[in-house]
Image: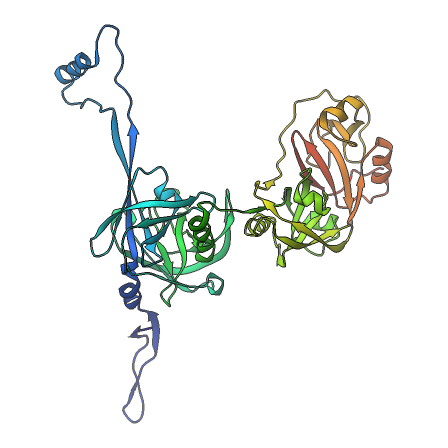
Length: 472
């Protein structure tokens, strides 16, 4: 790779009259652009949209109404029944016979897709397939012997490494921008299946679907999203790793859709306090909140309060890792799963099913209930045992319902919550009676940190209790 050299310090004169200079190296992107630029394309789409119909006035037909607009409101054009919506994006050629990768959102809803090459040739493209979950789309033009990109390995990317984007921001074709890798493995809201590459490369509307190159001229990602409060570049850009995109396009080319794995669990992040409650050495893994009845997880013996540490030989450092790892596993695969249960690790074997997206537990407020006029326990709450009717309606075999929460309450609990389980130092205890709960609380020191499994509305989550009300 060629570099530009420049003087970085004043010349130093030696006794022999020779001049020494300190030099630094900066990357030269010209060869990369010359070699790889022809494989990058501009994509424009057309979509027919219905416009608002003319107002209906009894006794006046459409022709008379249009004449009214022409005569009395001459500066406002009469609306046509249909018009075209246009959008711009980028893409890159991955095979000599015309297969092109881009973003799914670039071609979504398009009636026509126009592809323009750097040599000004234009083609109509057809959609082979699109996957909204990963935002990857595969399209094809009827052409041969086209220039193609080379693929790199995103796992070899290092934070701080130079990268280059080529695309069509705001319609300016074949625009080149450069920057560095800012972070790897980023998860974005509602994008749990893609470990994004974060860069500070200038990416703007129209860059979507374009390639991200490393300094070897290899595509390592597809530029997909930016974080912006203005709609323009603010230094935070995100690219889909090319290995993820290639897996998606392979499935799209083969069967027109993408299959992803699922195990049927509701998961929750393991915080520091939760790790302490479960006797785990540090916050890691994905805490299983609930297990779907009859799901692959249930058949494998996974249970609420298990913490998934390793799935299919891949470590689960955070709960956001699990959907990504499971989703990348082919349905029908049998994989080992290391879990943390009752203070020790053990391994189960799960046969992965077809995706039904795992959910992250959230707690929704229940309807207000009248507080009971009784003394609170050491949690600062009042509970009552579930009636047979409540058990039937909630489909629970045990639990204690919170009827009042006092100002001194030591946990984020609300009236109507159902306490299902108490976990302390990895030991799990199902809560079945008020007497049992009070004995458990009495055995704990005031500053003891523990965890409650709480049912709130249709959701279940683990809530950490930082300590108890002093019994004295």
